[in-house]
Image (cartoon, rainbow, N blue to C red; front, side, top):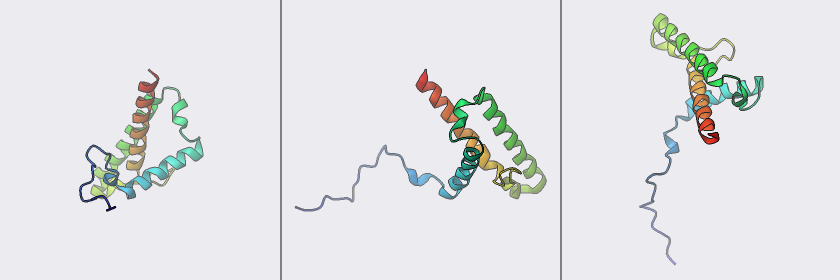
Length: 110
């Protein structure tokens, strides 16, 4: 029996995980791990007024980046959060992911 021809593989419509920038994702994961250690894993699901609080957090980090960019130029994008030592941009991504997950959880639970 011959091997199936793999030159044409039906990948259409499948997630393209290779599009995720792994180096950046590692930094985002470090921020999430910091939060899990400080509070608990996925504790954002139990935070009162979570949408408002994570939106506020996202905006605080975004304003820190904006201020740093205005002061330092492009290198300001990578300015670090004082508590975690990780870039504010990674915190923005985390807050965005949390907001997306909260919305998905809300949609799932009606």
